[in-house]
Image 1 (spheres, rainbow, N blue to C red):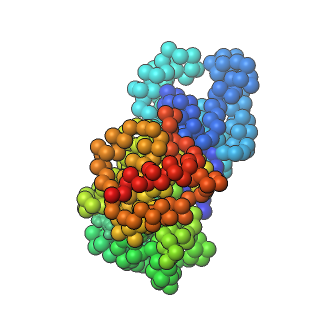
Image 2: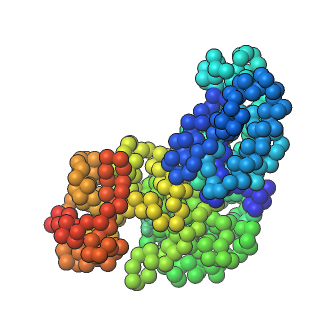
Image 3: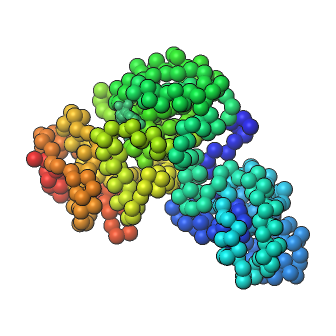
Length: 471
Ligand SMILES: NC(=O)c1ccc[n+]([C@@H]2O[C@H](COP(=O)([O-])OP(=O)(O)OC[C@H]3O[C@@H](n4cnc5c(N)ncnc54)[C@H](O)[C@@H]3O)[C@@H](O)[C@H]2O)c1
């Protein structure tokens, strides 16, 4: 299958959930829809509402053939509507060729996987027409599996899994060894990595890409990659045509630069992100923002370019120096504060992915991810960027929590931020430059009992909060 034919994510299309009865599609559709800011549609409930009869009674009185016709017609109608929704389909809907065609054309389809014992436990004793006899139920389950797998673009079994799939993110320990299969399409690949990461993981990536590997490009490690001359060099070295893919293997600095190179080369070629730092796996690799720095400031030139796939392999973090891991911890703790619950790498990635699916161009809720960052950026600028971003974020989170009137223990206990020695006036000037204003007031992301919100606070309050971070 060529790249053009593949459905890589649910960004501009419906997200359809398919799978056997008892898989939990209805509940998952509601959870996922709320998290990615879409309407949830349950095809069976919709049909029952229209026909004014339960699915069980419809089957019994009018037969399966008539039911499938009604089901297909409703599916077609739903998929033609916009904006895109999260649609839970009935267990047998994919039997109908018309539904299969509609899925291919209008949806990114996730198979909600369930084992047969769990499905039976959940379905027995209900009025579901195909759950009246265990032997029939189990046979049907086996029969349907190839049908589901044939129609699915991805497989998942929880809300985070559905969201990750919908964003084109593949999370698997050891995934780097399968990189060749995980890069969509079958065209050539330009592999870009920083000098450190190429030394550690380059050989494994080369082996995994096999014959598809057309060229390799080594960039300087760290922020030094995020310069126009580095990106320009990539453009001069690439030999890809539009059927090719850039694979960016590295931390946030590397993927920001390589992503921008991919966004502009031939007016945009697909790219795959393989984040190798914790910052990359929970933050920078997700959501399609790419950027380079210019003398006037960090990340001032960039583009939105959603990756064809993000491959999160936590095994790659084994070689990450402790100093770098701490940078990522700050972003992970930030995400926990936003979500209001503990999050591992996979769950933190899914949280960010949901916000980015909801607001791909950073015009609304995606700005929540800036929690604490207004203060962090000001401190970094006042320190001439000689302050690790994670430490600045940890301090920024303290200020955000204080201004929100909340306990700072989750941050002090996990990150132990220490006040920094920078010039107070420079930090304040930088903060005022950095942020959008409402009159004199400064817009901040704050945390309430129900989660994050945007609020304008007076300059006096904000400056006082900033001052507590400086010694
Ligand atoms: N695009 C976004 O949405 C976004 C979000 C957050 C941050 N960022 C950007 O990310 C950058 C910071 O990224 P970062 O913290 O990942 O740092 P980084 O990319 O600078 O990498 C840090 C260092 O770790 C090394 N390294 C990376 N992976 C390794 C591994 N697995 N083993 C051993 N060494 C490894 C690198 O060679 C480098 O020296 C900043 O430029 C920031 O602006 C972008």
